Image (cartoon, protein in one colour):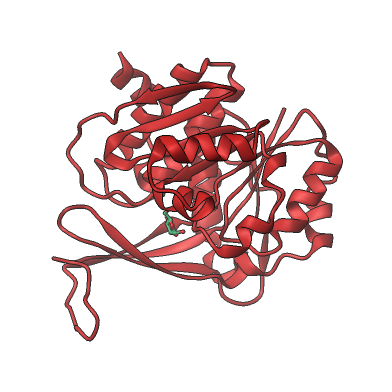
Length: 294
Ligand code: RIB
């Protein structure tokens, strides 16, 4: 069993600011760091750090190969990452004193996938494998199509949410992981419990997971709802917490953990991630997560 993660690789430019910049305002940052990021790369690193084999299907510009090396150093199989001409995806991230962020994305190489490229990368995948997807690369519909034809299991985290996500065959997802904003846009409802009921009606074969930030997470499987409160930690930077949750949740599910244990492990990993700066640099190792859970 292999997890194929068709996902973005971004160069994150992180600016620490006293508050998120307002319209028309010019604001000096206190510091600037350049780190590996992208919801795709972050989730691959989280799956790998949780101890599960993950092959990243991605693309990056030639001047940023250091980022691919970092993914490899953190345990991700990068044999399906292509270095192409042109700019990499990047993100301009403001992080304020409360650890909250706002992000501007530039798609770059993440938006250059054709059906042929995806078919080539997934040529050896089969029904024992998973396809993990976020929403920072182009041609998601083709990726779904290929995975469904191969009988692969699909885990989808529609982040960042866009209107065209609704046109994807979401009923074919084995696992759908959304935050509150994504859940609201998908269902048209705001109350988390009502959202779960609505999404469970629409996608009866899908395990639904909703992350609630500092309020924890919910999981609906068949007619059962599981809840987990967030752990109380000192927040330094929330960037990448959702990605850490997704990677650890999927790895735990694949490891055969029950629903509650999957939620516990993913929430603990996400809690640890917000105590450090940066997305990928803050994703904890499995031993740190186990220690917290003890
Ligand atoms: O989820 C956090 C990520 O969102 C950052 O690493 C940034 O690259 C954006 O994709």
